[in-house]
Image 1 (cartoon, one colour):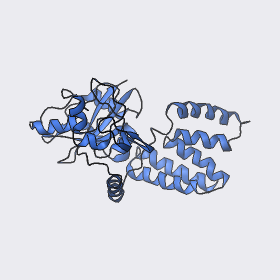
Image 2: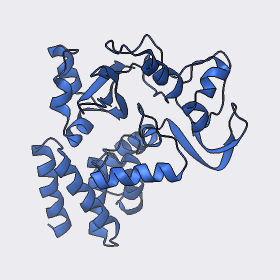
Image 3: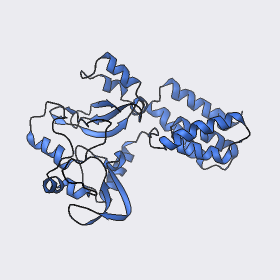
Image 4: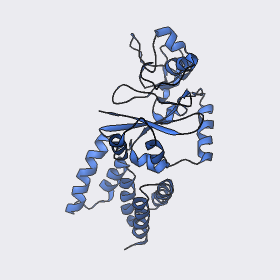
Length: 287
């Protein structure tokens, strides 16, 4: 057994025993980056396993295609399984690396450099996929200006809108011009009495794409910040699984469903965080 495989087995054991806690995920990412720098075939073979464990299915499939022995039946079987995942999932549902406070600050600085407005209820819209970047740029339907960042999540309006820039969402012009909204005002938690907060949420905040009607959580008298799509693995990696289960919204059966949820699966969870006390909450729906 080579040293790469020994280290992987130890890291995999740690990952399984802790149910993918933040430290175990960070350790796997550090190991992944080390293997990616190596030209050793044994390192590449183990890298396939690391990619697979972290759900980088596309990367695992492509690397195994390059280095795998196609005369080996086990390799062929694994290629077949990974091919399906690569086609349907790509790397979209890869387990994210838990960010340090420094990394979070760098992300804020990057968004500021891109000219992305600050959205209180959706702080990382590039990361969640609410916006996409375009090197060539597209023309915003609302203001007519070229933008290199455009909106991709739901916008509820009579007219069919192709592109919206972040600024037209942040200043409310898109919602005003098209009499539209980014979130259904009936699909939100109760407990927020300030109408200005609801106006900001539905008219000046990027939405998100769910399986069914998107729903927005609230806590401490205010709407929460949307953080992205998650499953149980992601919640464990962030260290917040038990926290989101401590929620009177869910009964025991529903809590078990959250524990078994898979990001991108038939039951999808969506993560929110209270802007005031920091508590994490989820919403979930089915495809």
